[in-house]
Image 1 (cartoon, rainbow over the protein chains, first blue to last red):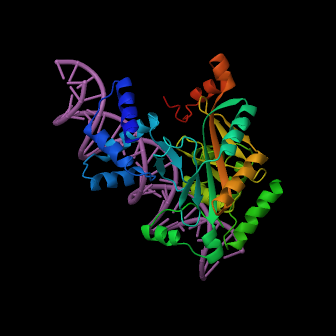
Image 2: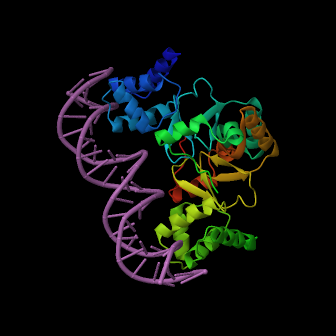
Image 3: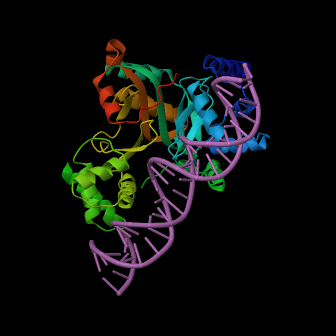
Length: 166
Length: 166
DNA sequence: GTTATTGCAAATGATTTGCACAAGG
DNA sequence: CCTTGTGCAAATCATTTGCAATAAC
C-alpha cells in the first residue's frame, strides 16, 4: 500500500511535468505514516518532529498538490480549520461523524447512503462527483454518564470544538 | 412566518438578557427578505443597499448571535468562505448539492436519507444532533451541451468555484 | 542550462477584538 | 444609571504570493 501511494504520486508528478523533491517525499511519508486527520499546522509540527525542515509554504503548496492528485481530501469538521484526510485511498466513499461534545471524529461507510445519494443526485438532474456527509452527534457516554474520556483529552489539548449551540 | 422569526429572536434575546437594537432588526429583516444564501460580506452589501449603516463588526457579531439562536446555519459550500443559509426554519433537515461547474447550489430534502443517517448514527453509538450532506456534482447541461447559463453568470460575477480537480 | 521548487518575508483576506462612545431597559 | 451594543481601527489567524536562491532533470 505504501507502494501504491508513491507510485500514484510519481505518476501524477511526471504526468504534469513536475519534479520529485525531498520535501515532497518527506511530506508524503509523514502523512501516510498514520491514518490520522491533520491540519497544515499539525503536519508542519509532525514534519519537524520527524526531522524534516520543509517550510510552511512548502507544506501548503504540497497539500494542494496532493489534494489535486486525490491522495488526500479536504474535509470540513466544523471547527473553522482546513483538515485533511489521508484515508480516501482505502475507503473512497467514507463519511464522518463528529462528536459535538469532545470533537472526536468517527469514519464510517454505508452502501445505502451511497445509493440514496446517487438517486437524489440523478433526480435533480446532476451526476455525482463526490459527496461528504458530516453528522454531528452526542456520544452515549456523555448522555449516560455525563462525561467521556475523549472530552477531557480534547480540553487538555485545547482543541477547538464545533459549536454546541444553545 | 415573518412573525415567527421576530418572535424567536425576541425570545432568544430576552432569555439571554440581551437588547433589541435597530441594527439587529435591520439585519434580520434583510436576511429574511430572501431565501438566498449569503456570506457576511454579501450581507453587508445588501444592508448598505437597504439603507442600513450597520458596521461589518456588527454584522459578524449578529451572525454569530443568529446562528446561536438557530435562526440561520453556517453551511460549507467548498469555496473557502463561510456561507449562511436562512432556510432551516422552513426545512430543518435539507441538504445541498453544489455544481462543480458553475457553483450553483440546489437545496433538497430526502426522508430516506434522514432515516439512514439516523440508523448509522445509532449504530455507531451516538445520537444525531444535526447532519449536513454536501453533494458535488456536474450538471446535465454541461455534460450534454458543454455549457450552462449559470456558468457564464458565475464567471461574470467572479464567483469562487469549488475545486474541479484534475 | 532550463525550468520547477523552495524558503523567506511580506501581503492578503476573512474574521475578531479593545476601547471609547452611544443607546436600551 | 448601569450594562450591553456599536463603530472604528488595530490585531489576529490561516493561507497565499513575490522573489531571489537552489535543485531537478
